[in-house]
Image 1 (cartoon, helix red, strand yellow):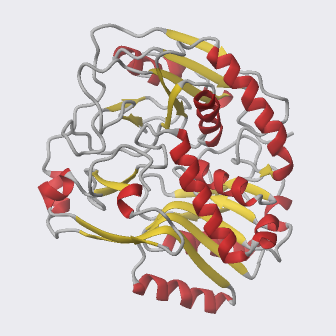
Image 2 (spheres, helix red, strand yellow):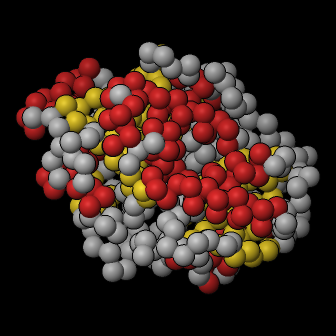
Image 3 (cartoon, one colour):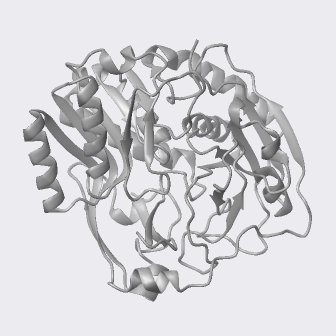
Length: 429
């Protein structure tokens, strides 16, 4: 199943230049080949030089929302197949920041889970952390769990906990999360769900041993399993590359429009502090109203990329879906904390890149967004898409619009930017 336009092969230019190989296969009942799901990118990082760029997540690549939803729905179906529909409906789903916050929410919606929450790197004022766990190879390693109501994580412990990530490399982060959860609210069944599972037999043995030690069941489900073969020299070779050129400048500056989206008081904008199944109908209705407001200010005949702010992934995805359903040529992606290597060459998934000041006060920690146009069809003559930048209230700061902020660097490249502000971001009332 290939619902995006991608080059043949998950490795492409990186494989040709550095000898990287990816071998993988679909899991039972999954229609997704590994080449449908990832393409290898690079990062100039001494710990890990490669980056598995998802073609269905909407993080680094502007992606048709239907492709994002299709992959997430199939992952949700794999969870149901593993635990049963009744258990899934009583489950709590935990998505991993930052890349899987939207994916986890999609899975929770597909399985009709009781509740959804995602980990976060943003410390909310007045909301204590219920728990934390670490992600060793990530650019930002500490995950916070900040439910506005701790019962979200302590109720229905007889039901499974579903942990969702885009990629499972070794299972170590998932085990750390399970341990943190189990110490506070023990349950007997955990499911680790991912688009791509890279675990080796040794990694699976470690997970099984940990499950035995804790006296729990840990299942793993995914759309594809894969392994990556990396030359010993790749870290040094990538480190020796000239830094990629960021922040391209266009021949004119784009226009800026600010739009304050209507949103019901007390309705969560996502799962950062918890989202209940009972919130879904009101959320869907609010999305319809907000999407119509966006349609009033965009050029519906042109291309649009709906860009979420870091962990704010699900709401922008739903807005992109609503725009697409109304006939707008819409794609979806988000900004990120993670630096990656940019190179404008055919067959490489990170052709354009932008770096900018974090809109929340976070001195010395830049943010990034990549591509904005498809890296697989881009051309110099292509008309740049309009950018609908969806942010929540905590990110609606002067830093967002000042020189070096995301609005500045995107308009300097020639993009028209609609800043769509959702007046939420804190815990539910």
